[in-house]
Length: 460
Ligand code: UDP
Ligand code: MG
Image (cartoon, rainbow, N blue to C red; front, side):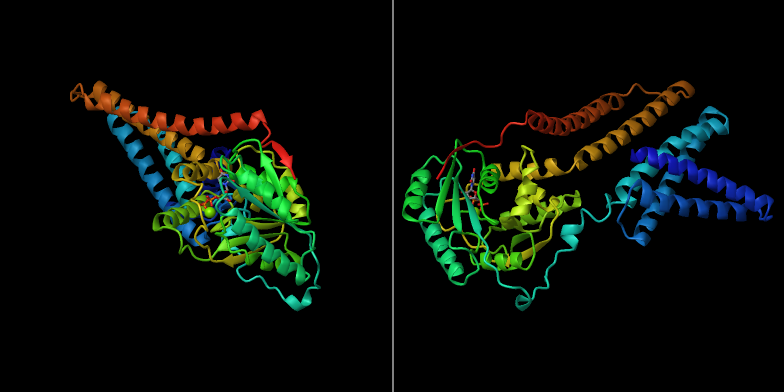
């Protein structure tokens, strides 16, 4: 689609450029150099503005993308000239045919250069940069202007083999709820739902015991382990309550942030994201890879809240909106900003895990990261399309060159490298492309099956 737009802009540019040149020569009586300069300038300005706004809907800064665009045109034009000169001097074709062939590298370089270099940030303007650039770091929020209100809260806690921490988590949550009830910010019937994600230890027995001994504790048992995201979703979509807060079982997320989250909710925000202030407790490796990953996602146009895990408050309305999303490859951090709605951010320090060990080993983390990219961005696909185009073009030119050498000169040496290397090179590229396409195919496959994402065994 954008290639077609690019070609239309190219044709329009040529027509307007040529028209200007003739007009300047015949009506304004400019000389050849003057009219050409005028024609080219108008053509370039026109194609730049059309390409920036219409073809690529780029959000890049005008001046810098214009300079990059000029650079791309310069390179494309040089390639065009080189091809034409080469053809004319070796084949004695007519200049028209040579020019017609020269258009191919010109267009290819121009298009790829504009797509990946001149207009780097693309997309519907205003959507994908919403999160990274417009973080409401300081949400204006005046406590006094908001009438106090009592909200009915459910806290959802996914648990996988968390027997070591649940007792402590429950006692801290009990303290918090009690305090909030006394302060009259949440209803006395507010509750906690532990979602047992098919644990293999005594987690579910512990939850049953806690539910018996504490009125506010409820449990949801999944039929088997479905992973953190599915367990969380099962909780979010199954519980009642005006406001739903999700938090991990391991007490890494500072529970006192919940009070602030509720204040923001009362002030009118539908979603409140908990964002960790520092990554002091993470290893260097984890914090470095996490940072790089968030950057990569936002570069690929995926909306995501920087440094936000799944610690957040959601209003009933946003939960209802979330129900409409039926995808199987869940990446809630990407889906929730897509819901829209007003949001605020609460910062907190992330602590060490209270007990037990991380249920996200490197392998799970990598697959989660990959999920985030392939579920929300088709950039890898676009990239390989471009790469495929470029490689094919280059091999086409090399082939033409080899044939020409063979036909018109005596220098042809039966070459091993020129035969074998391209085979390996193209073979590698093709495999890479197939691999990435396969990833997406796998995704389409699992989405079309529309399997239920979890099955609840019991709710108490
Ligand atoms: N979790 C889960 N299912 C899983 C893995 C994890 O429900 O398959 C829960 C886990 O019990 C915890 C939360 O997800 O409450 C986050 O896991 P963890 O703290 O191990 O991850 P980390 O903080 O190390 O990234
Ligand atoms: Mg944790």
